[in-house]
Length: 305
Length: 92
Image 1: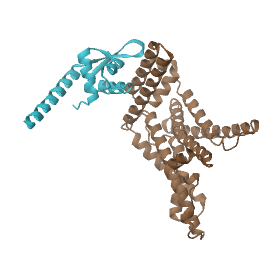
Image 2: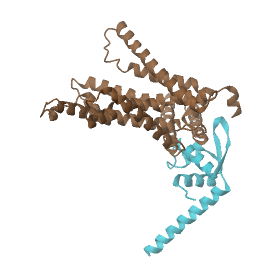
Image 3: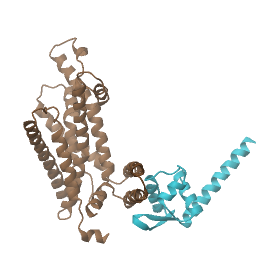
Image 4: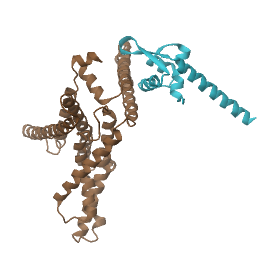
């Protein structure tokens, strides 16, 4: 109870939202106990899942009006943009301005945004963390970034480099591969019976994993920050929480790479391509489990509520 | 005070039927209120002072209208009746 309550505290900051969740769960238990057949219980479970989704959507939308949400999004974007701009220098000085901009938007802004979100920039110690709202916003932004911005940037970069290298007239002929296809296009390709459908499905799964990684990282950062803040100052908690979240995420991703190697060694029929998203899913699961573990409350603090 | 439709339905049911659990309100509303969402609306109404609740059985809460809620409902009904009369007057 205390761990679950701690986790819902992190997701839903206001008391009325949490109470809505608890009452919906109580209704679920009540109706499930009254259901007489397995069919009836399944119907109750389906209805309850819809009710819970409705609660999360309504609480998430209400959270957009909460103090600090705008500041958090602004500060996180600025921090990610600043680090990404510094990182751009790695790519050398031979880039044109539009190419540099396309690299900035399409290749490096997203991962830095994900990392920056773990620090909770712009949040103040007295404001409660609107977890469900920010997790939804993070998923939405990551989905849009991966589904629209990255493919467009990839295609632009290919066309621009082809033109610069003197492959004149080839610009229009550069067909879009999976990295250059939008998520909608990938979905269309994945649903066909063509030879490329399998690789389109794998590319979609990779985008899905990255989209799920954004809220996992954000929540892990928030969980760590709250934990560290019980002993240290706010700034130390923000920096320490952000760094620790990044380290946990990256190291569990590395463990996922090891798992993929092990799996292909044990089952040679598995291809590396099938397990390409395993490191991401490992990092996501580890992050969520760590967040749940960090969300535990002491019995004393629960009793004080 | 602006009274959205869902809040108005809840107040009508609470005033008409007496104290209710959220699920009873959903079942009596004939589709006007949705499961889950009703509790978010009730929470918002409690913050506005339109309803009050007390802990009931198995984690559920029993909701009652406050005097302010009853007055808000009466005012909303009066206002909508006034509008209807105006429309009828305009048509005539």
